[in-house]
Image (cartoon, rainbow, N blue to C red):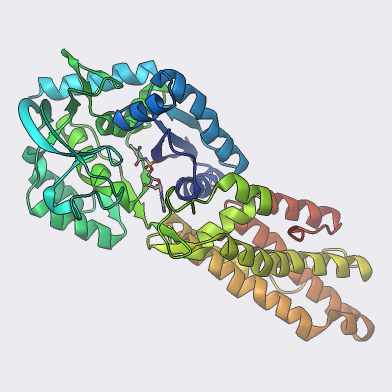
Length: 471
Ligand code: MSP
């Protein structure tokens, strides 16, 4: 039986336009899922959208539509964006799925039955953009620092999830890495915060109508974050995947790590369910040094980038630019530079040159001479990929294989060998050919279409530009 690998992206708020930030996490998940599929794992790759809550209800109101009508219309935007980026997800999750609604209610009911829920009065500052209560010390000049809006002072009676009961258990699972949080620095941050004391979490809303009715109290809905987190689990029931839970990996950015690293495992503990094996919080990126925001008008649209550079180049440039766990900067110019330097003049040029020479000097590939050196490095690169070091893997391929190969052609001057030493020429081209076959395999999870094109051209020996000039 094949081993399973269940990985997830966050479910994105449906009212947002799918932007390059969402694309970043989703591309990373896609690369991993392709890698594990190639390794014959049964991969289940889940992505989707978060459709309930005050934020969506407000957006629907502004659009003068019923919330359900509103969200239905927005789903294709995400699906189209993922299609254009060659995202090969297994299922696209929607939280308005009726089965999810029933399963989420069922989960909350069980929390109640096990004594993990209590009704209490609560008053706090609610930020609709974050869909959460902010503490006073989190506000900057009275505003939410992420959304630059003044949160609403709210007092209501809510149902609370008694997370504080689970503090010790959670610390133990994180410390022993049984529940693995990466990168290490984020894990330490989370541990530090938990040690300051866990508070119980309000998990219902009295004044949000657009949501799943709270079991046993129709006057409230389940807090949107609670049912959103539950998508990872309810999906395993909805798609009837036996033994799929626990997830092997939840991917997200650092903005929503607390929910995934603390509240989510708490909910699972309460029902004695296994925790996900690992969660990884990658960095946040800025655009040309500035925070990406609608107000600044600098939001990068993946569809436009794909139109200009092609899906593979966008996938490559985003994952190559900076290490996955760190913050970084991206811009259209940076993508354009990568396209020209690394892809067109680097990889594309290398393939073109070797194939042109094989044609010109009539060299057919035979397994002679040295064995390809990449084979020996493959294990190391796979290890890096398993550890989500996407940027390192790509940097290695370009630094150790593509760049030196192009330089070697300039140095060895095969066109001179063609006159002097036919055997040497043959060995040279054969070796470089093998090298290209290996490169095509290594880049395949990152750049599936390019890898396929390379493999076709290596078969037919007909060179065609992999990365044409951008108009
Ligand atoms: N709906 C919740 C998630 C629920 S998951 C159970 C949500 N949605 S979101 O639309 O705001 O998506 C947040 C996620 O989008 C981040 O965690 C990250 O994966 C991605 N990113 C959004 N902006 C980003 C950057 N500027 N940089 C990197 N990733 C970004 O939160």
